[in-house]
Each structure stands twice: as C-alpha cells, then as structure tokens.
Length: 243
Image 1 (tube, rainbow, N blue to C red):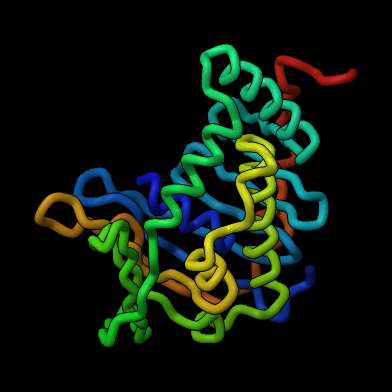
Image 2 (image 1 turned 180 degrees about the vertical axis):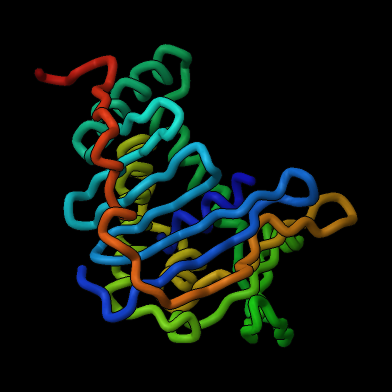
C-alpha cells in the first residue's frame, strides 16, 4: 500500500467544474474505496466511513475530521515542520542521521527509471498509456496513465493536486535534510504531464493492483463538504508549540 500512497500524494481556487474521483485501493478482501473531491482550492479525501481529510491549497494546511469523536484537527506547515524537527532529534538519538537517510534515498533513485511501453489499456472507460517502473533493470511496478485533460480537470484543479505534491516534497526535505535534492526525473515527468488511473506492483511471480480509478464525475461539491461539520469540536495537539 505504500506505493499507492506515494503516487496518490504526487497529484494531489475557484474551479470551472468540481470533480469527484473514486479509486479502489488494495486487493481482494483488503480493498477499499478512496473518494477524492476537488473544489475551491481544496481536496477532500475519504478513505472510509470514519472520517476524511481536507488539503487546503491556500492556507497550506490539512484538516482531519473524525466522525466517531465528532472532532477535527487542523495542522499547518509550521506545526508539521516542528513535529518533523522532533522526529529528526529522535532519529539522531537512534543513530540515524538525516544526511545518511538522504544519501540512501538519492542512491536508490539512481537505479530507478520509468519507461513508456507500446501497450495501452482501458480503465474506467478511458484509454490509458502503460508505463513500466524499473529498479536495477527489473520491473518494480506498472502504471496506466492518462493526460490530465482526459479527466477534464481544470488548470486550477491540477494546481491543487500539484500543490499537495510540492508540500509533501518540502516536508520530506525537512525530514531528510536539504541534501535530499529535487524529485527524481521520472517523478517530475508524472507530476507534470500524466495522471495515474491504475498502479500495480510486481510481487514474486504475480502482479498486484494497489490502486485503480473506478469512477469519475463532474458534479458540484457543496461548500459544507469541504469543511468540518459545524457541530464538531476542534482539537489541539498535545504539545502546543510556542503557545
């Protein structure tokens, strides 16, 4: 599941037409539906019935809503960076330095490459291009992708997805150190030109699909869907930095 989470986070204003995407993640009995809704510079992601998460491009913050407790937690970039600094300190105590992790990350990416194959397939009624992700020359994963225009995403909606990718990259740099460098070329290519509709990884002698788009709708997303319910109580982190 870590692969699908990474890819989802890569793509992840006033829109011309709100968009709702539904993915199925996992395999067999462990599968579940992930719903993503885009509007007004916000991206709402529902993983199950327990709650949902909202990424706000304008405030650069996440809000996690918990239905069972009728509460929600909002965390901005500054707070996340402070949490990362605490995590970095703990890693240093365990003998794992940020520069060492960054170097290991860079070294791993040197041996990865993404190749466009001559194969096409259909996902959710759309023709998609098959790409092969290789590690040390061996197939690691396979992605079927479409151009963003096939999903009828506006430039502003794409900007919301890409702002999430940039946010994740900046947090990774904070955790691993400035020596981590920029995204590898194969990831930059995906983020700039293509959108994943299916992601499968190779495991032993089989191929396991971790993520697949099953439905795409253009429909209005009510404003209340992009905010916590009014009767829910806001939570504070256990440690309140500088307050």
